[in-house]
Length: 278
Image 1 (tube, rainbow, N blue to C red):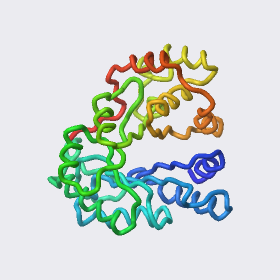
Image 2 (tube, rainbow, N blue to C red):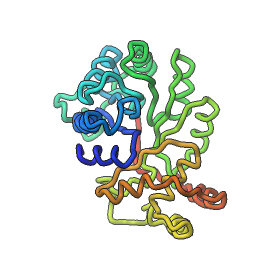
Image 3 (cartoon, helix red, strand yellow):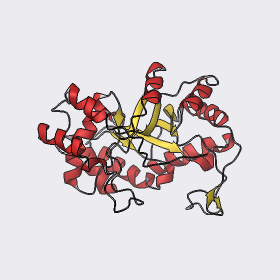
């Protein structure tokens, strides 16, 4: 991970997304420090995002969780701190545990995400975060948050790709001036639970491949450009090779045509690769 992030910075990546859940903040912090020490990049040129996990939703735990992320990253502040999901969960017995379960089902607490958000607002006031946002929220949850906040969420991070357009949600956020960050923009082909069936593999879709050939680009580049042309930030997985990493950032020398955008949008089939229930 350290070498991947170092190489990403060398290639020009500046938006680095992580989360306490991912257990990679220390490695990312190590890579950032090395590149800053090399004068390859300045801290203010980077946009670092981390997230508050479900097990730290209790307002009394929010600041501690943020400080732990800051310590792991070796930073004085986080550019954007997101509430990973609106669901709170009890603290696990083992810190390496994803979240406590009972009979194979996740356990949740009664902690109100509004209370969690209000604790996150204090992080901005204290200078621990430049801005705060949310992830995996729906419209009703966002409306309720907007009715009870003093700092408006700056960003909503959601799964978004041509198979999952979420138009009503993204239109709502646009009206509320909440920016969208799209995760899984390539359809998350390397997700651990993906089966052998390729019928839902976005990058293998004939329409995506056809558009890519027309522009002499890869399917991944078309899907990333799709998000950019929608006005979204996007966080594709850096890939398993330097070639993938360079390919993913080489998307600023072409634009999709209006008919390309329509064709990709028409692929919407409500395919969700990451399910959040609660």
